[in-house]
Amino acid sequence: RFFNTAGPCRPDMHYMIPAAERLPDAPRIIAQLGYFVVHAPRQTGKTTTLRALAEKLTAEGKYAALHFSCEAGEVAGDDYGAAENIVLFGLARAAQALPVELQPLPWPDAPAGSRISAALTAWARACPRPLVLFFDEIDALRGQSLISVLRQLRAGYPSRPKEFPASVVLCGLRDVRDYKAASGGDPNRLGTSSPFNVKLTSMRLGNLVPAEIESLYGQHTA
Image (cartoon, rainbow, N blue to C red; front, side, top):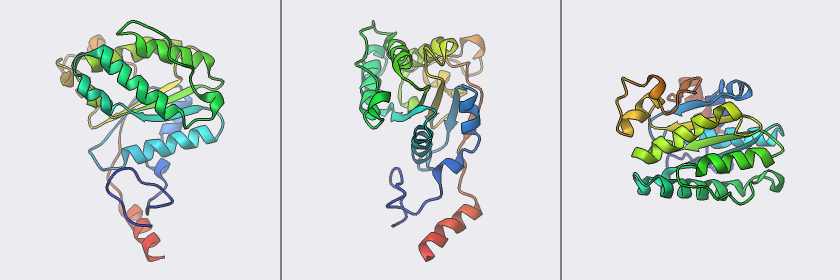
């Protein structure tokens, strides 16, 4: 194994601490059917942590949990219909890693501005387990594309867990209070106009603490 700072870590290849331990409160909030935000600077282990947590939740048998990236949707700009299609393509591709019985059926037809909502509703209805979705790189989406996705998630929130994902985690470089600024609004006037005012909390993935550094170097020494 070796130390890795270029992209997500893999336990079979890299020295690493158990990724899920870096967000110890996340399982409790997911059990409460909570929607929440995880943010941190680049190269701090967000993707590694969320992917490991999703795999753990699915393996435990209670949830169908999936991590996927919205990064490719950045090229769509304000074309929210194109952004929806890109995000749903990435979601469907990532879902192929799930057991067959947990995978979604082909996405239903829906007009632009409602495709995310229609797809997640259809999947939640058909899936035998509650859905937990980790939207990584959510703030790669821009302008009206970001607003559209967030508003669809907010609109579906009251229908969880039977008609919509039980828990949604948004992950990016910034907290949700900054999303409105990223999409052209005033971050100081969120109120009910916030596109994601259903979130329970925001978690910042911190730097490694000394005990974790010792653990990493201990693995190398061993």
